Image 1 (cartoon, rainbow, N blue to C red):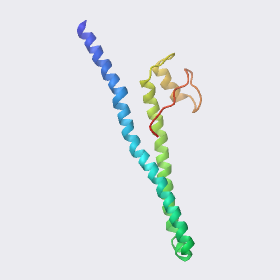
Image 2 (tube, rainbow, N blue to C red):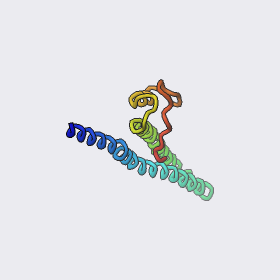
Image 3 (cartoon, rainbow, N blue to C red):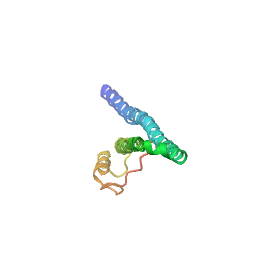
Image 4 (cartoon, rainbow, N blue to C red):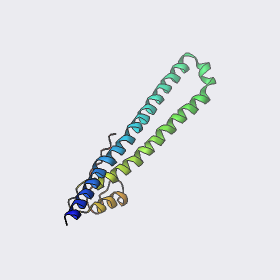
Length: 138
């Protein structure tokens, strides 16, 4: 029986390490570059818009010659922002599901909490109870 107890303890330690260290570490490693991409895209858009305004004010004839390329650049920046926002939303959903497995449920099972996150419409409580807000570092 001692061997089975040791195996069970080892298994519980592995699961705890997986839930409380490995998964949060991986999610954190994804969050850092995502934050950088989102922030830099916003800064880039602001700088381009400011630059285009200066060019238009000082050299209107030059600005009109380059208006098509400027529109394409702004469109590309908007695409980067849109896709990084979309990735953030997917990341937030995934990290929330992993977080749900890592918390100690009080009046329902961990699986019920995950189902609530998947099935319940956004902003509404599920059948179990409200799932805590997930902090992903954003």
